[in-house]
Image (cartoon, rainbow, N blue to C red; front, side, top):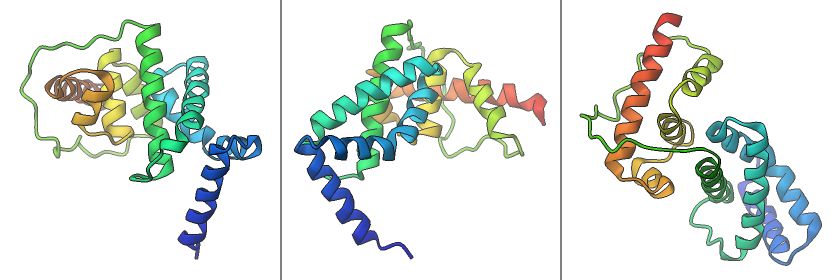
Length: 181
C-alpha cells in the first residue's frame, strides 16, 4: 500500500525546490504532470499546437505562482485550474468564442444522459462536433468536473449562460450519440 504521508512529503519538497528555482525540480514537476495537463488543454482547444502552447504558458504560471500555492486543494487540482484558464485564454484569442445569453429551461443537473455502451471516442467525437461555446462548457462541466459557478468565472459568463450552454450541448451530444446505439 502506498504511504500517502510519504507522497505528500515528497510533493512538498518538490514544491519547495521549485519555489527556489531549482531547474531539476521544475523539470521533474513538469514530467510528472505534463501529459495530464496537455490532455486538459487539448480537450478544451482541440488543437495539438495550441494545447502545447497552453501547457507551456501554464507551467510558467505554475512556477511563478507556486510560492502562493496555499494547499487548500491538491497540487494537481490547482495546476489543472491554471491550465484550464490558459487554454480558455488561448481559445478566446485564437477563435471567436461566443455564448448565447438566451435563456432556456434547464433540466435538473443530476439528470443523466441515457446510459448506453458508447465508446469514449464516440463521446469525444460528439463533443468535438458541437459549436465551440457548447463544447467548452460541456468539457469543463462533464470532463473537468467544474461546477457552473466555476465555469462562469473561468469563461466570464453568467451562471445561467453556463447552464444554458451545458443543457444545449448535452442535447446535441444525445442527438449525436443516439444513432450509434
